[in-house]
Length: 96
Image (cartoon, rainbow, N blue to C red; front, side):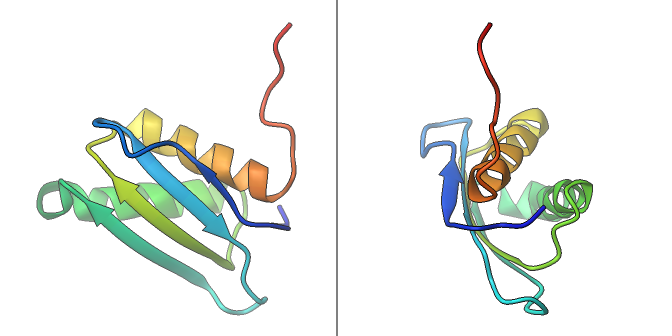
């Protein structure tokens, strides 16, 4: 997946997560700025999940700014996926 623009998904609400994605130069790697109200308890798990989500979409060069307010793992993955797809200008879903 090729990231073309800045994008975000989520909110600052309780039990949610705000994920901001920004493309970077090839070879820059994964630059992740993570703030979380549960950093001490779940910070490593959260980072592992984010890296797994990036691996799923084969993203190796990206800047992520993430502000977590205690989101559950499925919410984290959904927000990361949506932000990545928006940054790649892919359709994130349709209503039938």
